[in-house]
Length: 375
Image (cartoon, rainbow, N blue to C red; front, side, top):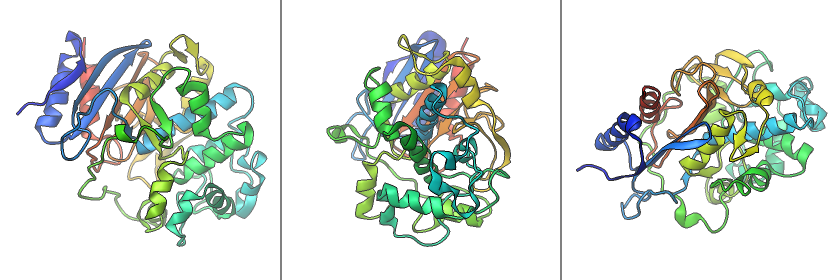
């Protein structure tokens, strides 16, 4: 039985539509959406499947998806806007805006090192109450006091959750608002983007129900940073705290969005910063934010990674097509959003049947490659 696909795909993207249908035919999807923006215009928008596991609610243009770490691209943008406004410099120390962070040998850690996963704080090596993740100030205090798990600046080690508290606290110390509030007030609401950090009231009925994966991701050889980041029982919120946590403005994990909203946002970063007639980031800052800060074997992820200032760079793994200057972020389960300034492109994929790939999920990878192959 073939899936009914909504949205639109011009003739030049017919192959993308075929790939989208094939993902469903192979049983890889429950509900999904893929949107592509070129030179500021939505040129492809496909959606299909179901928003619930009982298959009674269509996954349509109103459906919101939890995008987990894809949220980090929004956090990187918001930090970049502070730099663009002259309120922050990537090279200044975290302690210059957050003095408590200087504890335990972290006085010289710069903002660009911290948001490119070089600070050595991927998670907590010693047990904490998982409910603590729902207490912003308590987590920030622990991170400020924590000794790095490796010498900062010598390697990257993906901070799946903690980088959101670090970036968010840096932002709050400068701007006075949480990143999610600032994004909603300055970009989301003015430009009509269906994208929130922290699930707001009144949209719960639009949120797609997740179908969790049946296996853990392949982390490779497990080390202490990987265990602290992902595998310790206290590495994420649990119990009643998990529901409270979902409403928190944690810009590493708590994004809820449509693919269209994410694609428009990243499309702006691929289009000299212009979003529906307004500039959200200067071209100079797009180049600065997306340039490489560190490259090498990540200490948490089983990949050689190239990190920009909060963004994943497409090189050297190329999860988002062939663009050597493309950047963005992937999220747990398969979501992703990317910008390609060379081609003035932005794209996003969201879904509710989670896969196990840590990066470069095969479903969006096939869609993106088909899109790039279009005439």
